[in-house]
Length: 204
Length: 191
Image (cartoon, rainbow over all chains, first blue to last red; front, top):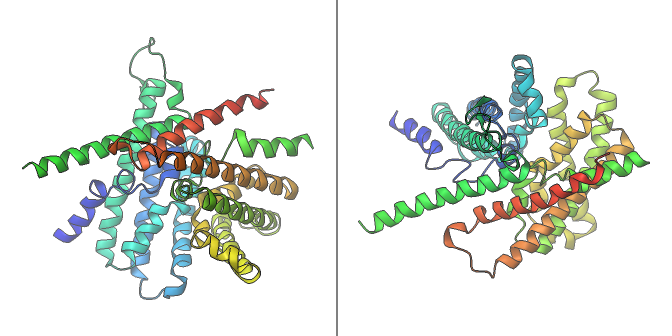
C-alpha cells in the first residue's frame, strides 16, 4: 500500500509531468486561457490516462512487443473518443472552446509515456495509482497556468471579476505569446525553488 | 483561386501551427538544436502531412460518413501507417537521407501537428485541392518555425545565460517573443 502511495505522490510534485518533465505541452498551452477550460482539459486527460493505464496494465502479457506502441495508441484513441463525446453531451460550450484539442489528447506524449514507461511493466493497482498521480499533477499545472493567465489577462477567475471595473486587462496573456512566456516564467520559478532547496541541503 | 492563396498564407504565417495553435511543440523544442536537422525534420513532416491530406480526404468522403465515431482512431492509424510507409520508401530509394533523418522519422507519428492538421482540415470541410494546399502551408509554417528557432538557439549557445534560465525556460521565452512577432501577421487579412 505504501508503494502505491509513493507512485501516487511522485507524479504530483517530484515528477510533475509539466513542470519537471516538460511533457504534454501542446494541450497545456493551447487551452489554458481560462481556468475553467484548463480544468475541463485536465479532467478529460485524467479520465483517458486512468482508463488506458488500467487497460494496458491488464493486457500487458497479451500485447506482442513489436506492435505495442500502435496498440497503446489505439487504446488511448478509444478512450479519447469516449471523453470527446461525453464532453460534447455534458458541457457543449466548453467543448466548443476546447475545439480540436480534445481529440488531440491522443498525441499527448505524457499519456503514451506513462503506458510505455510504467503501466506496461506493473500491476493494475500500481498502474492506476501512478496514472492518478500523474493526471493530478497535470491538472494542477493546467490550473496554475490557466488561472494566472485568466487573472492577468482578464482580471477574473472562473469568470468572476476580481479587481472591479478599473482593472486594465493585460490582453497579451490570453493570446498565444502569453502562454509561452508565462510557462517559461513558471519553469524559471520551479528551477529557482529546486536550486534553493539544493543549496540548503548542501549548507546543512 | 483567392481562397486557395488565403488558405496557404493563413496556415503559413497568420495561424502558424507552432506559434498560434501550439501544435508540434515536442519536436519544436526537442529537435531545434541544430539548423540542419530542424530543416530535414520540417521537410519530412510536410511530406507526411501531404499524404495524410490525401488519405483523410478519402476517408472523410467514402467511409467516415457512415461511422463518424471512428474518426479519431482511423486518423491516428492513417498517420502511423503513413509514417511507416514513408520510412520504408526513403530507406529503399535514398539510404543517405534515411540515415540523416535517423530517429526523427518514426517520431513524426506522435507529432500533434500532423493529427491536428487532419482534424482541422476535416472540421473546416476542406476538399482535396484545399486540403493539399493547407498541408503545404501548414508544413511550410512548421518548417519555418523550426528553422527560426534553431537559428536563434545556435546563436544562444555562445551567449552568457544565467544558470536558472538555461534549457526549457529560455526556449519558452524565446518562443513567446517569436510568437509575439508572428502576431503582427494577423493584420494581413483584416478585410
